[in-house]
Image 1 (tube, rainbow, N blue to C red):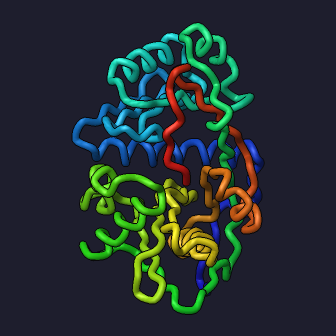
Image 2 (cartoon, rainbow, N blue to C red):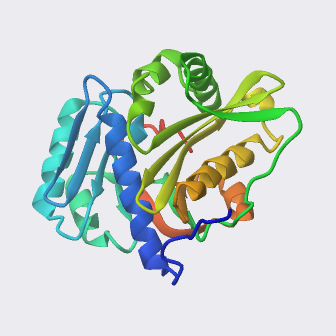
Image 3 (spheres, one colour):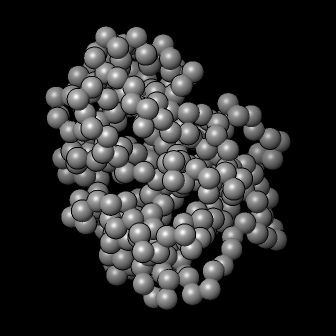
Length: 277
């Protein structure tokens, strides 16, 4: 990687990595949600509200954006998202956002044990981090056909209707600066998908999905590595993601470690219906 110097190689603390992870997640989620026609996206009073208008819980969230967040701003955001009527969660960082737990209780929201999610970071991203698998090719989306394959693989891999995936992943999404889509092919068949979103020195890795028939071949791990490798060449030295229970051991094996943990608060009669990454 001649001629390339990574920024900020003086080292980052876990608190700094947690901030980079959180900022990237909020920017990614609000950016993608805002592309949906019926979306409501608002960052005000230190609170981020994103409601895509779709029945996909992770794309309807309230999060603490920064330390300026107030109880009033949080309560207002919850009232807005409740009125919209889509499945949603309030995603609080354990420890960091504990001051809002009494508000959740007063609003009648409950912590769901299935909605505890680690925010993870890989720093620095190792050089020569990628790996190749026989018969497996990953392409960065540049053509409409690749986008169609990406959508189909995402829908199958995440267990969601294809029409819903198309509502979220529009042709214009990957025209957004810093947002990149990938499709992985095994022997010519689209089997994996992934998304990367760059914010400064950080690449966020999202929507890593493998169709059920192609799991346990290392494709998801290779996709995760490819997104980070491309970002290194473009100046990033931190990769972040939010791990599902299925993906956690894979990411830990790759060197990612938890730097923050999120707990989701939902309506007490609301069934968990989330799309894992």
